[in-house]
Length: 533
Image (tube, rainbow, N blue to C red; front, side):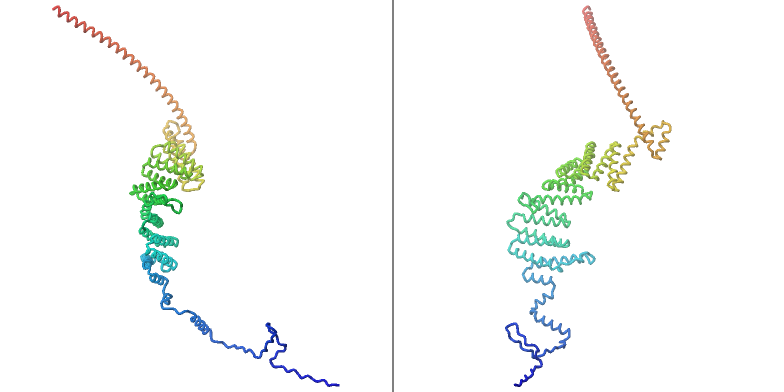
C-alpha cells in the first residue's frame, strides 16, 4: 500500500491579504498588494496668524504691479480723479463749468450758516452719479461746439437741465444754469428759423415760473410770444401750436402778477392792466374755459373799482363760457356777480332775476352751499327794498340749508340776517301801534309784549294792520271820488267862464261899434257947423 505524502504548510506573509486579490475595472489585471503602511501626522503647521499672513502674501502675488499714477487714483477722491480726467482730455471749458458749480454751492452753503438746512444736504462733489452725468454731456457739448454744431450743443445742455429737474428740489438752480446755457447756444445758430430759440425761451420761462421768478418768466414768455407770431406750423408735444402755448402761459403769468399787485391799493391801475392783458391772451389762444376765468377775474376787479358797466360786460362773457362748458357752479358764480353789478347800477328788478337764476342753477346742480348764498343775497336785496316778507322767507331758507350743512359760521350769519329782517318786518306795525295811543290799555299790552315776546301783540298788530288797510282803501276811494267831482266842477266852471268871456267880448264889440258911430256923427256935426259959419 502506498504511503500518502503530507503537503507542506502554506506560508503567509505578514501583510498579505486573507482574501484573493481583486481585479481592476479596466481589464482583468490584478491590483498589486499594499506593501506600505499609511502614517498619520497630527502635527500643526503654524499658528492662525501665520496662515493668514501666507494667504495675504499669495493674494499680493496675484495683483498686477501699479504705476505711481494709478496709486494716486486710488488714494484721491472721485471728484479729484474726475477733474483730472476732464483736464487730461483737453476739456477745459467743461472743467470750469463743473468746478464753478461746486464752488458756488459751497459758497451759498457757507453764507447760509451751519444752522441752515443746506448743511444737511449732500454737496455736489459727494455725488458721483451726478458728476459722471455732467462730465458725459458737458464734454460732448464742448466737442460739438468745436465743430460748430450748435444745435447738438443745445440738445446736450437741454438734456442736462431735464436731468437735474428730475433729481431733487435742491438741484433746481443747476437746471436753471443749463437752461440758460441752452438759450445762449441758440443765439449762435446760423440759418435757423428761430424755433430752437423759441423753445429755449419757453423752457427758461417754465423753470422760472416753477421757482417763483414771475417777472423774469414774463420777459422770456413775451419774447417767446413774439417769436411764434405767424408760425402756425410750429406744433408742440401736446399737439397745440407754440403760439397757443405762449398765449396760455402768458395768461397764467399775467393773472398771478395781477393777483400780487391787487394786494396793494396803490397799484390798482397796474392790477387792472395785467388782468386786461391776461384776458387778451386768453381770448387769442387760451380756449373757452381760460377765457371765461380771465373775464371773471377782470369783471370782479372792475366791480371793485366801481366800474359796474365794464364789470357786467366781462361777467357776461364768463356766463357764456360757463354755458358752453356746462359749468353749473361757474354759471351760478356768474349770475351772482352780475346781480351785484346790476344792483350797483340801480337795476334792482334785473338784479333779483339774476339772483333767482343763481338759486335755480344751484338747486339743479345740488349745490346746497351755493343755494344758501343765493337765498341770503335775495334776502338782502328784498330787505334793502323794504319787502320784508320776501326777505324773511329767503333768510329762512338760507338758515335751514345752513343747519342741514352743519356749518357753524354760515348758521350764525343766517340767524343774524333772519333776525334783522324779522325786526324790520315788525317795525312798521310796531310804530303804527305806538301811534295808536287813543286805544285804552294798548300801551300796557305793548310793554308786556316787549317783556314776554308773546304772539298776541303780533296777531293784534296784524288785525289792526288789516283794518287800517281796509280803511286806507275806503279813504282812497273817497279821495278819488272827491277828486273826480272836483274835476267835474272845475270843468263846468271853466266852461261857464269861457261863456261869460264870450258874452263880454260880444258886448264890448257892440259898445265899440256904437262908440265909433257916435264919433263919426260928432265929426259930421262939427263939419256942418264950420260950413255954416
